[in-house]
Length: 119
Image (cartoon, rainbow, N blue to C red; front, side):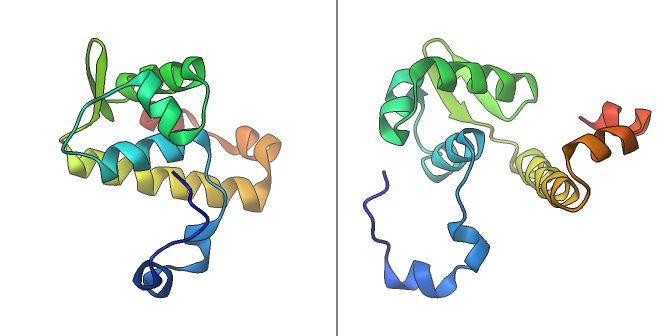
């Protein structure tokens, strides 16, 4: 997937944070979103992203519970509910910023019942 080079227009249009290292979950969601015209086997996603198949399968199962991917054995696809996907991404970004600002331990102490319900 990563060839060591990108299109110059992609480079020019990107923010610096676009090139930060992404988690396996982020990489899977981005891959499925970029290829939203297809459904994929977990092993194929793993091969494309250089991840372990078991890792991809576990992440896909969690994403399915959150309604972010669709599954018809053995295939997986991104949700067709783009608003849900964008909302989850915004929440993820907010959580990431809070984690960077407060640290994971302190953030856990600040978490309220209301935040639990959203997750």
